[in-house]
Image (cartoon, rainbow, N blue to C red; front, side, top):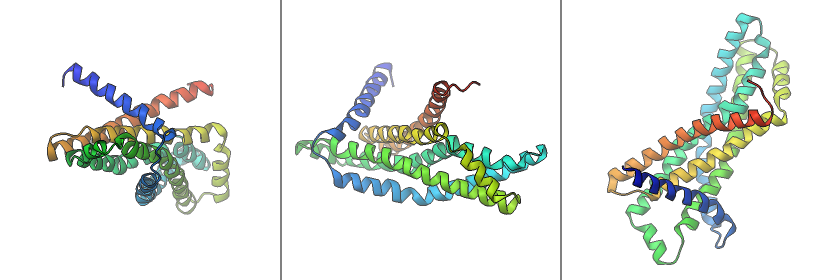
Length: 254
């Protein structure tokens, strides 16, 4: 791929990422597609999010408790685990699960529609593919990923509580007290803002890669794989960038 093709693809992605959310405010509104996508992204992803976050929370609590025990600070397990899950591990982990399941699904579905000329049929009938296909998916991702993140955080904290209390024999009330202490505006804002950004990025990348599919089955495989890979990269990079911005905004020195 030469530089001209790269610039053109970046331009097309920029146009899609701008037009997709703006379509929310223009008629017609495809509520049925929105509800279907929210069900697919939310309900369909709930099991894997709960399963993954539960065991990550348990493993994090187990490792943290073991390390702090050597320092005589095991009672602070809840604080460290809570901060890690709410600010970093929860949002990033759920977003990665979301990209793997939902992002690949969106790219594959739209790619199949491109290869089957269904997108061209929509244009022939005067229906905007951007409005009908992309906008509902972007909006659904922006709505459902934060919801899944809140659920995942709660499950991870519950798994950490189980390990801290029943395996490491710590005080359950003290653990919960540590969690309550870290529930301030700064930490909650950081943990709840990131999923909106991640959801938007995942949906835009996946829709763009799907609508860019060419070349039959091999092209579909390439676009689906690229959607997941680029989503993962942008999640990691944007997480670092946004974390650094929040540290500057809240005056955190490092």
